[in-house]
Image (tube, rainbow, N blue to C red; front, side):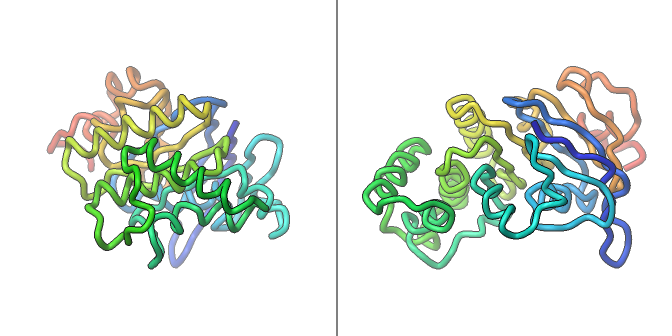
Length: 243
């Protein structure tokens, strides 16, 4: 389970203003909202990459916000993350995917190679270990990112805009891949997306951020039926409304 309690975080101005919610074990939780609403900052706070000014984050029984660097090294073994803009290194595809295992685990090289090959097959990109990311399409890069995020078989996986910049067909393939991986590994996932129509096809529950506050939380059906002006406008893509 992931528990977020009263998170406040500012840079030059407030970004997160008292955000609280829970994600149950085995759920896909979609976090939606317009640009600059605080979604990516919140995800990085959950992952322990940013420290809030106030509030707490727990993953299972471990408080992320109270963990020192040594504790975070152990906790990161339990968290996979897909970053928004690929964040692939200037290395081969195989080296990119293997990175979490090499950094966090003491694992034989042959086992790492086997895991990389298995992950590439799972994302329908078998045999491209020696290619470089610059030679891949946007959709292929996202698939490599999913492979890297899931290679450690972490119980928690965080996805930051996994379909940004992709066409609708490729986007839905990525969402289906995320759902299939979550089911196969029985993981708990948070998916940030501005592509509401796509992410709602795989989500169990939905939270909407606006101006750093969580203004809605509920099931997919409740999100679609919501009469909150901002939620209704965003979920249904209406041009008229408060956004």
